[in-house]
Image (cartoon, rainbow, N blue to C red):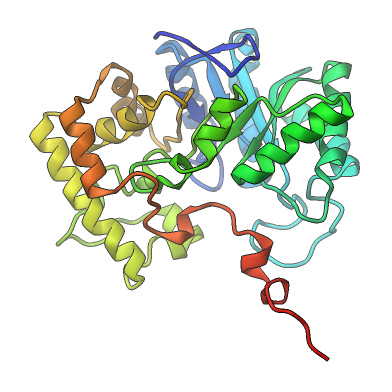
Length: 351
């Protein structure tokens, strides 16, 4: 594989990043099978792995740690994330409010947990999984800067941050003399193109690496979702039903677009998977899309995308099916701003 610069960090990464979300209870529960997939990816030239503490409540990090423990750690750019609750399953209420979030207290505690699970002395890229309105970004950047100076992390980045919060974080870093976010990990696929309107111009302006998650739109662009066929059995659909319920008009529109894209792929002589990944790979602002296979077969279908180049005509046709800057389903944005989630933040109070 050819390698790409990870922003301005000096680190060189493969054009595909192996996502580890599906390793563990959320996807493939057998550790040996998951480790085999990781080793196959490394053997194919992938040197970039992304996971998170919350994936299967730490189990994904444990599996990645096992896979790299046999002399392969030095060859990998290893990324993980923090933010989500770790004492209760994701999406369930309750738990300790201090065992989550972006505070210094939690960051310095949770990085040690991730280092232990990953069986490593350092993390190459430590990422804030989501913004948090209750924590000043200066607090977060300060804690991450200290971890970087201590050598526990090499660089740090954000994930699913709105463009204006990326700008704010860059401003705070400059004014306070702190380290800065050098990467952003947003949702991006043919069906989820909202970041083209604002985020990607911002990350390019600041020289940030961009590591898109869900380039196959959570499975919608694998060819398994076709009109006239039963919806496939999907563990992701069970965890995130809002993104897959076909009674939702937005999801029905996604199905229409996925069908048109499948036809376009067939006419172009490529698989839908390769069409979808090549589309993301060809954006000049993208560093490495994250592929998240659950099986060896899924990995094999994805690896060849790095050798596919889409013609101008094909890219123009994609723009006709899903116009630039369009995200078809609001559930695919990955983050809901507090002002949209809490009605009291957008209604003037009266006596």
